[in-house]
Structure formats: C-alpha cells, structure tokens
Amino acid sequence: MPPKARITKEMIIDASCTIVRHYGIEALNARTLAKELHCSTQPVMYHFATIDALKKETYHQIDHYHTNYLMTISEDQDPLLAIGLNYIRFALKEPHYFKFLFQSGYADGHQLVDLLDQPDLLPLLSIIQEEADINEHQVKDLFLIIAMFVHGYASIIANNHLDYDENDVAAHLTKAFTGALAAAKMED
Image 1 (cartoon, one colour):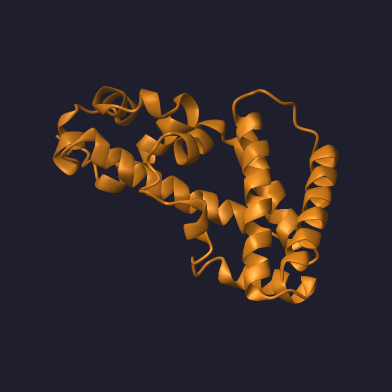
Image 2 (cartoon, helix red, strand yellow):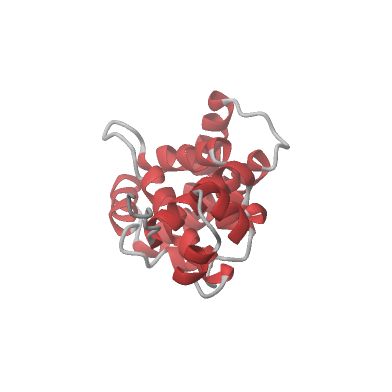
C-alpha cells in the first residue's frame, strides 16, 4: 500500500492562495482547504493553530506576488506610469487578491506612508527623483499623491464599479502625474 500523501505547510498556503484567488478571503476556512487539498482538516490545523494565522501567512504570500507583479516593467517604460498601470491591472486581473491585500484589514498595520521606507521602493524613488529633477522630500510627496490616485482607481475597478480602458487610464495617470509633479516642485 502506498504511503499517504504528506500535506506540507507550503501546500496549504498555495491552496489558500487558490481559494482566495477564485472565491475571496471569506471562503477560506479549514473545510474549503481540506476539499482543495483532498484531505481532512487535520493537516491544516496541524500546521496552523488558527485560521487567522493561516490568513496572515496567505496574506504575505499574496503580497509578495503583488510586489513582483508591480515591479515587472521594461526599461523603456516610464517607471511611475508603468507601476501605476500594473497596480490597476492587478486589481482588474486579481480582484479577490486586491480586496484581500487592501480591503480586509490584514495589512499588519501598514500604512501608505510606511511604503516610502521600504528598500524595494528606493530604486524607483531614485529614478523618479533623478528624471523629475526633484529632491527626496518632493519625490516622496509625489509618490504618495500618485499612489492615492492609483489606489482609488484600482479599488473602483476591483469592486466592479468602472470598466477598464487602458488608454483612458494611462491618460488620467499622466495628467495626475503632471499635476502632482508641478505641485511637488512648488512646495520646496
């Protein structure tokens, strides 16, 4: 008789991501995981003391995926516009992931301003600062303004309240960037 398949922590997190992707965070529980993994609920509860602990691990996995998605840009693209469009495309392509990351309360107390000190963001901020010929304070202010604009757009799209037209969105982001850059330059 072949040995029983061993359900690993990684398998559970991957299955959790699949459930969230297709059905939303509300559908994630021990029973839906057991069904997805074709096992009992015991392996799930063995690796995770609570479903909340599992949701936090799942959050981090999806957050990592989201970061990679955002930062996939080519060198010939304007970095701020490309990342803004990627952020909005993510909300369109992965609405359940987007809602889980930004509308579920699992962000571990992260606020938008905390993002400015993330090491992954520093190269982007440096590029924007150099291209726009602005100082460090101005680039952070510019990024916050654009991030709020982009997040609003993405939230509306993720909640099915706006049809997506790439050309319109790119034009709006360009206008927002131009206005925010002018405002940032006036402040210092």
